[in-house]
Each structure stands twice: as C-alpha cells, then as structure tokens.
Image 1 (cartoon, helix red, strand yellow):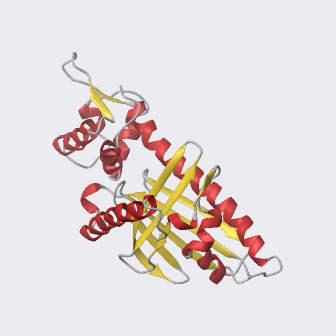
Image 2: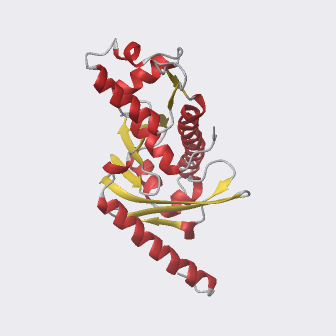
Length: 115
Length: 146
C-alpha cells in the first residue's frame, strides 16, 4: 500500500468523504470489517444504493474487499485515511504558526504605532 | 463540519481594520505569512484584491520553496476574504469579527473542494498566473526588477 498519494488521489479521497453516508460507512469500518448487507443495515436506503457508495470508497482506495469469502467483506485501508488526515493536520500547523507570527507582527505595529 | 474541513480560530488584540490590512497588503504579509522556518519575500507576493484576482505567495525555506497560487473568490473588506487554489482544490475562507473591545477574531475555514466543483474561472485564473509567473521568472533571471 502506497503511503503517499498524489493530489488527484487525495481529491478522490476528500470527495468520497464529503458524503454523510460514506462517512458513516467509514466510521463503521473503523471498528472492523463488515459485509455490504451489514453496512447497509443502519441506513434507510437499499443495499444497492449502499453498494454504490462502497464502490466510491473502493475506487479512491479507502476501502478494499476480501477476495476469498463469498460475502467479500469490506475493510478500511487506514493508510489512505491517514494521508487525508495528515493533509488536514499539516494545514492546521501552518495556520497555527502563521497566526503566531501575525500576533507578533500586530503587536509590533501597535507598539508605538510607528507606521 | 465534515471530515475534509479545517477550522482554525484565533483572537488578536488589534482592531479589525489593522488585521484586514495585514492579511491583504503584501508589505504586511511578507512579515508573517510563511510558517515557522519559511520567509515570504515581498517580491514573491501578488495580491489583486477583487473576486477573480490573483493571490500568490512564494514561501522560501531551507528545504525548498513553495508557491501558493490562488484566486480570490470573495473579498468583503474588512470582514471576509476567500480564495481557492486550483492546483489542489483547497478553498480557504477567512472571517474577521470585531469583538468590540479592540480585539478581532479571525476564523480560517479550509476545505478541499472536489474536482467537479472547481470553477472554470478559478482554473483560467490559475493558468494566467502560471503564464505570468513564467514571465516574472524570466525577467528576474535577466536581472530586471519587476
């Protein structure tokens, strides 16, 4: 499993996560693997509709399906999710440091109001 | 808030007009825009403060440089500023609130815009930016001042 994703892949991951149902599926899978019908149970939609959501999650790499058992259980790919999380974490850190520096700059500007 | 969003909040002891100026004037941005370990030279900052205008910052660090190329999507002085980075699909909104006691709250809301939602205007702006960056770099390498 690749641990670095290009921007296109990251876009697909974020697009997949932009949907409430798919976030619900990801949350359920973070507790362990599950079959499509198990995943569909809590949602007021058809198994077929849930299958389509799972297809979106599979295509971006967030979810993989077992090959051997007939039920082909779904499983979360944590590395892919971690990449999306690290993008958010990196942005947060950048803004935190930027705001620290802005705070210092604003204090300088107002100290004696030299400008 | 969905899983692909970031919200960052900070209160500054400064009037809103001054905070707005710091976020929109290249001379001020050059003083703080780069995160720790990076600088943002005045020459590397472009602010065309209107919707569709360019917002570019060149951040220079020891381990390399990063050019942010964005297009403004909202400019409401001194309240709201938003831009999209067409290359990555990141959409950032800064909202400034006057807290009435001489301090200002800044909320940064960032989300990753899925590909189909990115506007053609943003893309066009981005391509123009690249052309101009190329011309700018060519001028610089010839030793001319822009």
